[in-house]
Length: 77
Image (tube, rainbow, N blue to C red; front, side, top):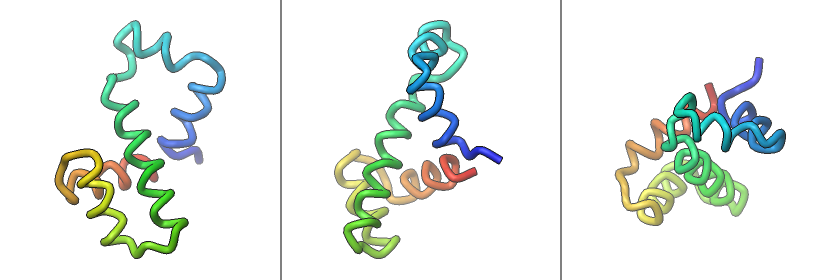
């Protein structure tokens, strides 16, 4: 089964994401969520533990750590 992040990335590669965003089929917040998730993954790859990655991502995106956690859960579902 494909997770949300993989699906969004696939749509982007195929050039469909912008069309779906333009038509209002996919909410614009998914772009921000995708960027946030990618930054979270970068921090994890750098060796940060999960809680630090949540915290540092939240600072960069000016939101709460809980918001980052929810985005991560959504992208991995």
